[in-house]
Length: 457
Image (spheres, rainbow, N blue to C red):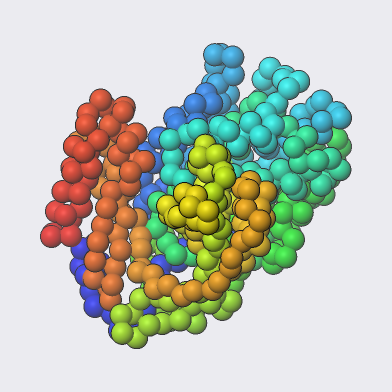
């Protein structure tokens, strides 16, 4: 791996992950594929523990029509009793009809009896659980976006407001683990872009508390608007609502297998083993050595002098001299959760000699309007300045290293194919330091030393 990181290159490159959804996608399949592709299982286990929702993971190697794959099962503990395998769905309920919304999916375990809960978790409660978890801010933002996408689709199907949607206790926990795991795992994969194949949605029907519906399920159809889909003729639910929400948020585009230099591949297993059909999700990670293959719609160009990538972003600014400092912190969190690339405040001296703060938000072009609305809604400003700027971005990826305290992710930045800087992931180190009762700096130093040894060979 050290040689790969230090090899010279004559072209700018991006690292991408390609999702082959020839047998659909579900939350557990995505987690399994990430682990099979080399993302440390400890990262997912720590994320599940951080959620504190009474769940754990069971990870195993299985065979699906001749292909070895990683299977991830979410075990949910209800009322302190026995472990319960995952239910088939996210357990979304119509607030006007208190019955469990259940679809038996071929990707996931069939339904097992469990105590019925009239009151589930609302989307607002789920947001709070994610915000309080000791995981990275970027992962929190992605997880919340996925859950909101799922909630909006279910709300439209049920013809209610999204905040009225409730996720039944077991289903909510199951979806939390899948979605937060997907966000954390995608970040740990360390790619610049996730590209997805057209989705094989399956066929037939599914049965839930409201009746029998065609495959793909109504919520799945809503989530996959604008996405290329097809059916191979297999009568099974191959794309679940959770899987559809993950793809809708995490993938940047849909395409055939891209021109790339393959680095590693992983397979995530579905629960069923269909005769003659490999029920797996394949993820392929590698480098795209030509900018034209890194996203036809992306506003990126190659900078010949440094072989870094140059992209166009929008800068939003507002001067604030009468905003409660407590509110400012909340605004920063909201902006980051909504997709801001960076948010910061600068002390300034304003008119009438008032001390104030210059709020600066870096955003993707397509997110500018949404984040400007948040600034207007949450602050006292009467105006938001907007301008486009270009920035150069080094190629980045995540590498997991082993220390005597546990695995830690290292963020590695490269210039011209050579490692220019690297640093341990703060959230990983903080979690380990608290769990093992050792100084944070000790964990960080050991992680840096472990990575330093790996690149020295």
